[in-house]
Image 1 (cartoon, rainbow, N blue to C red):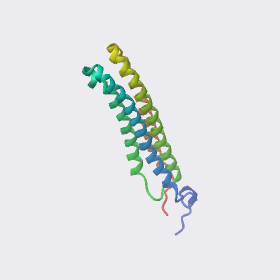
Image 2: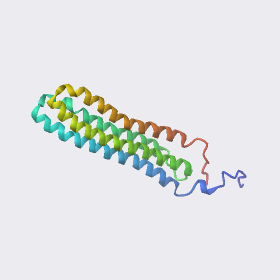
Image 3: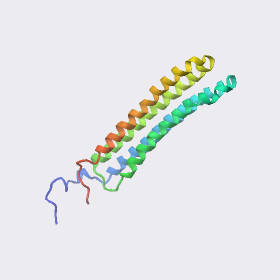
Length: 172
């Protein structure tokens, strides 16, 4: 029996390559957040260890920068898992593009957040080692940098929840 609904027989909405865009979104979400997270960890860790020579008593306190940088990669992981659970062979193009956009949103926000955490952590750890009263200011600025990644994961989740509402069902 041939369906009479014109939306259900429109193959332009369910091309064979649509799942590729969803897979790109999944990959971009984890790749970009891990790059940002690793940069933030590496950049701030150099300052943590070099200042640990001067003030070993502040070593554990200064590891906050590296910990916050690692949280960024968790944002990408959450988004990648949500996207990968919705990847199927026949995928509506609308859904695939929203998955790509969601992956790019969390990935690029995580990249920016990781870079800013690394730069802030490097300068902040060196400054707070010389003047401990600067530590609270460094933590506040790190929180502002961390929230950039959180914005990305919130937008990503919002896009992913909307990606399957009211779209064409790819049956063939």
